[in-house]
Length: 250
Image (cartoon, rainbow, N blue to C red):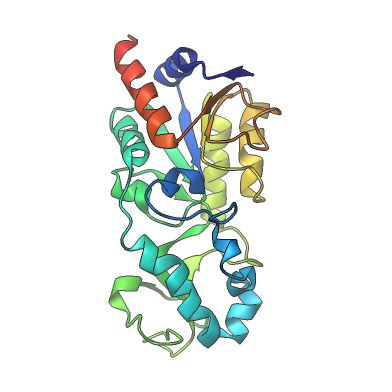
């Protein structure tokens, strides 16, 4: 494993046939969205049971105010940072094929990325637990507690994965496809702890991809599968790589 070899990383990215980015909470931390773990993490302030699917179904009137406070009040105000924008630029330039994100904050799309696979769902939509209908959060009276389906009166649930729920089948299928197609795999801002998402970089490595990791601290991947570890904030590291990319010819 090489550390802070920016030039080698930039060349791999520039010459990749199929570059995939795998992103976690760390890339959005600089947009003001707290991570789940760590000193300032969400789980230091809230009980994780709030996002347990059985607890939510049994206690929606208790869970909803906290879910709104945890996610919607913060995410609504958040804007993409430089790291998100560079990934958007790389997709437009044809360098980046897809983003697999564990985040539910919609910031990759706001930054211009089109091919974003939301492994854990998103906060844009609500889904009825009775009839299965989906609604944009902006089309629903979100001040209700709990939030009710306008069609059947069932309980509406934010369309992201709660504890005890499976990963959406299409997101999983697309994630595996891009993971196995990758010759370069960019891991950004994730600890490598959350299953089953955490398994994807291992599958990429097993299939021959070079792993470039960008994290402020070493992760579960660093000593096991990472080829180049670039330590620092995602905004600073991606900016440096982007500047190098413009200097490196095809």
